[in-house]
Image 1: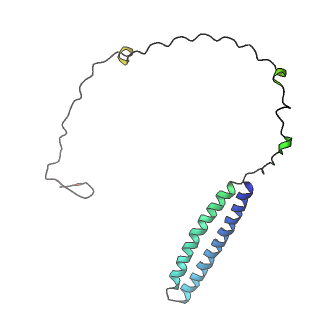
Image 2: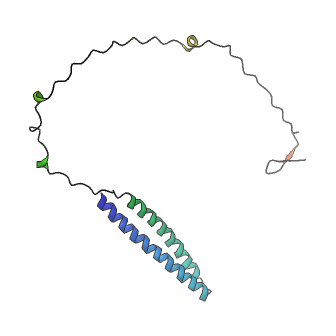
Image 3: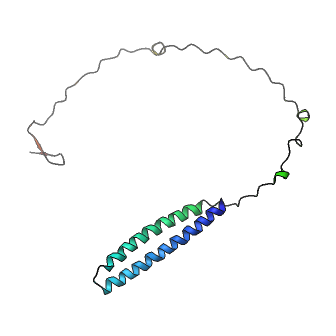
Length: 152
């Protein structure tokens, strides 16, 4: 994984460097063309500068992410299959220490029955909602601006 990420980071860095160089080159040519001509060539180089600038930004960003994913330590080599312990070489179950005798646990208390909510909390008398009529202070023929201010 680290080798692939380092190769990817290196390639992205090279592409980003190339596009950065192209950006500076097209910008320089565009400045020269602006000083010496009065044609449409300037717009061509301005477009090329913008495209190369955007591409180089994205490539430098991708290069940074790929570089950050390279692990600090190299990957360790895997052990060959012969070096691994076989199941026969492990300790026999009789040679292992016997487990301590399990102590009996305390018996669980039965759960108390669920009571309804009204029984848990003293109920208060619920008051009905009061409906209030909102009276507008503005007369019905009032005029307003676009921002919502009233015109007198």
